[in-house]
Length: 239
Image: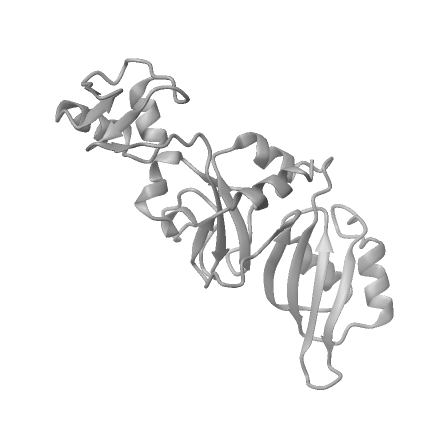
């Protein structure tokens, strides 16, 4: 692998910034100062240092984000703030992207990565990766409504696959109607459209789980962290 790519993929800086660092003689390979970013290094055998600190190479990064309302699931946009805008400078050289999307007014779990294979597997209809949402509704849910939601709702352009509805609160002790719904698809506005099809309206929507990956309750809206090794291993076991 080229040294400049190694440094950029390790979060040291952009290709342009790396070029300047090399010129300033701030990069060493096996304790020798190197000024040419085109030389090849072995990420598993060579020791690369920046300002005499060893650089650990990371090919992929996996970031859990608690997406807030008003932010879009895109890498760039001229009008709205994107989920990429929420990340710190340490991730800008990795060219991460959101795995799937959440509507601008939907909050919760969003995975950001530069691993195209993982993204494809998580989103592939053939993999049937479950997505669990917390939902606050306008009206009470009847048993008939629940049966329709769980057995497939006929929408204008397709019929949804089987889902699972878990009642948290259905107006028994207050006027709140709160449920979890788990689906294996993720089509445009799907959860909102499903409830609308049974005569209800979604007031608040938050994704809390994707496959085996659950949203970290310690993450405030707009906060993020990298996945743990255990979380990543279990996530890949979905495929």
